[in-house]
Image (cartoon, rainbow, N blue to C red; front, side):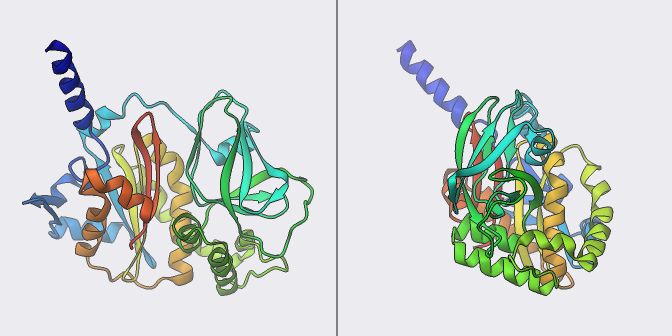
Amino acid sequence: MKKYLFIIALFAFETSRAQLNLQNISVGNPTFVSQENGKYTLNENSDFKKMEDRFTYGNLRIYMLRANETLRNEYKSIGNHTSLQEALKAKKIKVTELGDGTVNTLEIENISKDTIMILAGEVVTGGKQDRVIGQDVMLPPKSGKVQVSVFCVEHGRWTPQNSGYQFNGTIGVATGQVRRKAVVDKNQGKVWEEVADATKKNKSQTSSGTYAALQNSDALNTEVAKYMKHYEKLMLEDSNYIGFVAVTGDTIISADLFATNQMFRKQSPQLIKSAAVDAITYGSVVAIAASRVMAFLSEFLQDEDKQETQVMQSGTMLKSNGQKIHLNYYKK
């Protein structure tokens, strides 16, 4: 009997662990979210409207996602991690072509004592052609060689340059349009189409058709810098922020959600930049109803039992030791 009681108790503990759901996450201030009969709504009072105004710049609005104490306690033992940008700069990671080169696979190895987090959508430059990472990856210390799904974002090149088969640079997370085609559609042709469209709209086409050419658009970079300046302090004002939903016009770009504030703060600059490029390139003045944002969040944060299936159909989920570390989700 004691054995069965122990199993039941253990099962109850496992199923009651706080996870990334609407019981533990609010939009901005916890008072802005209310729940009745299992349905979550936003209280669009004057303070909520002020928050929307503060987090709106140009064609972009950010709805911050905030963890409650229960969720923070659940994840407090998770250690720090190193981002891909940091790892490449410090030569803590090797990113190389697989053999003589395979378009949709790269080989990655963590050669450091750090834990390295790579986000789906990050663009690495070098090798025989620039690539966008197609999956979230958490590399433990001294990981050994790991094969990772990628998509080409440089249609017109298949020859190594100064770095040979190595990838020594990254320009951060691609636009939501490019990222979605890699992460959700997993379609190389659609990735190329989105890269071509983004570079054309920003007048930064090159002979090789690389997404990285967006960095050469002075007009785009000037505008992105303004967006970054507006949002950088806002991202840091609450140590309980763990993610956000980005919107432009009447369109939801995407949502990113992390287990801890430390993870979020490390990744938020490149995610804000990605959203800003989307808003500048494809967006318009924000006109979305907050109720649509809440409905979007409910799609993947309301039902814990269906969450993983839902997210993997329209985004990506990174797990470590049974805990959800990062969610990236797009409107179906």
